[in-house]
Length: 318
Image 1 (cartoon, helix red, strand yellow):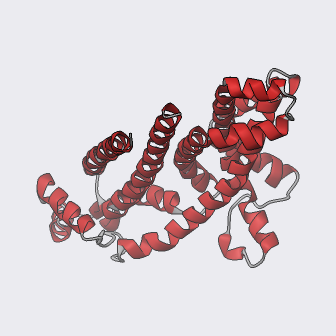
Image 2 (cartoon, one colour):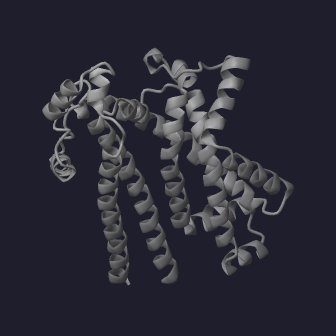
């Protein structure tokens, strides 16, 4: 049984490795297809064709695509993403602080959304079919249906314009206390957590209801075991695999919302750096940012797959 589980897990890891190779090729192909390049940005529209061609040659932008791909792949394998074509600074240096800011935002969002999702999912499970369950599930479905950019716009209008309880722009340099941290991160976190919690809660509820259909849960109900005890001490431990799977999948979808939220709130994170670099055609920075986002997404989805496989095999062994 353990050998079979190992083969399944290795299969998932192999599929993820193949996906990573595809992602690397796709990132280079898409960035190479962007119209214009950084030479046009640096020299401006008034530059002569000769000056632009000379700058492209100095930067290696006129090399064949396969050669540029090989140089980029070799540098990434040596953990050296190169230098920014726009500023000349090391890409790792540009990304370092931005990556920390994005991880801080994602961590704060997870710290809010995971407990809230567990609480809502478990509460709906214990009151399955009640007016509370119907109301919460309908509200969560409505939030899931709203695009993240619209949630961010509504948050700005309500909390920054109407009630003025939080700044419209996330200036993290102004954070010098816990209260300032809450004010600055309130709207980006509440926007991301709203979308993530809605999706995660519905998935957790579905996982728990599936476990609740087991005969031993029905026996516990017939014996008069309190619902809270059934959920916390009987159902949840046996549903931990699907629940972790649901959390990992929901957090992976968080990456897409980060791009929108960082742009709307002018948050100095990875997504903002990538958007600015795309506009400037700073290809090394765009490629590194895109690769980090894709690797993070692959890690979370692979973790969800492995947990799902392990929990299924464990459940089938009983």
